[in-house]
Image (cartoon, rainbow, N blue to C red; front, top):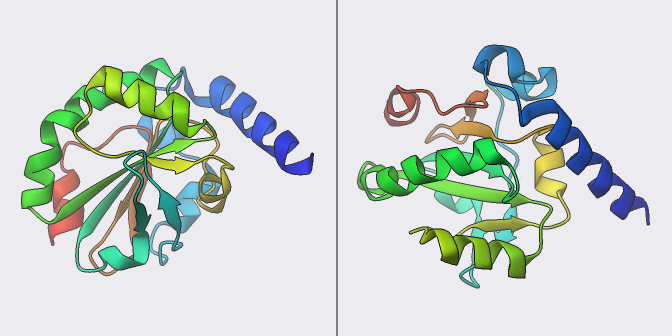
Length: 167
């Protein structure tokens, strides 16, 4: 019951807080900004492709965490760009980890299939990873360096994201 209430509250806050926010610097929460410069919290999540991804296994690569939901219009706007850039990112040793916060595998898989997304989506069905990262709204991006440190966070992927992840 408690976890259900936390999930409901997080979903409500996400909808109110960020599905209208456009200013990257102003919309990043204090909790998220506090993570910049610190080690990224490790996690393992199941994907829509029935595999498991562990963040710690990706050390040596830059990582983009993209927290989103299928119902968020601003999240949906970002997906075509991410899909277009996906192979180029991987060629530069940058891993894209789109993480759906709080929705069922069935719903997310149907959404991904309908959108013809070229990447598996990680499923944070209980929002534990989103909570660990201090996510209070979607979309939210975290850039994680090859050394495993959070180097940037915000609601838009910066145009120069590669400089954060390849240096």
